[in-house]
Image (cartoon, rainbow, N blue to C red; front, side, top):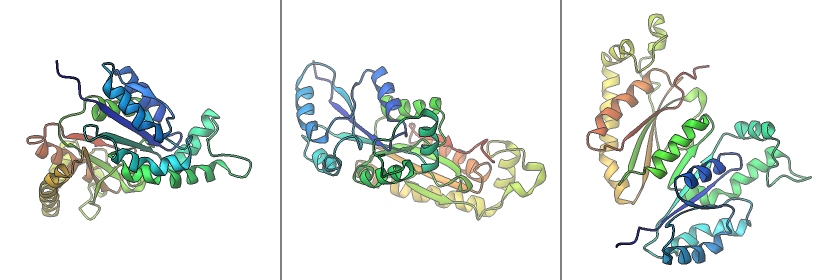
Length: 289
């Protein structure tokens, strides 16, 4: 019997961004999960577990609780792992204001706070220390606006029920709520005609027929759609050839209710025919405040 391929998932990110949720979700799915492992111990762990007949799905959390040297060295450590083992790096992040709220609500202590460093300063310093891992990440998830259920669904879709080949996601958002931290490509469609200024259309979203009919009549909307399709179709094979596992294409309008939602719906339908694993997400739909 052929041995199950060894799978290693590295989980990192800023404190309060949801690493414990990922570990718990993966553990429930059958992964062996290890929290707060010093990166220099990774080769020994991988060597032992890959040679054993036990569980060959391993998730390891690495963050600022270990030494800063270990964090800096992680990309090099991963490069030197055996060729048969390809580590996937997941990096979690959230807006600093959201992290402050989460720590205040739970009364947890941030690992970098001390008598001379406030919580806000600790959160900022943590981002600097984790930059080498963030830059190496294969997948980034911004948990700022995700409910716990939505967050677990993303982990399930992207790590547990991971499709073969590159996973393509189209994401709509509103610039008034900030650019998604987990976007790889961002297209700004605020230049397109805005249904919001038609009072009879404000109650609808880009999923509704009145908005779709309004936008379909606009030449500039159709031209923007065609340009985005051509760009993504042209470069998607290059991302796949570069061994990318995930690609998030974000489409942004002002509030994330009409133009971006419409285009993301159309783009997903277009690409899903040749890329069945194409996913769709509307970050700010229903969040126009």
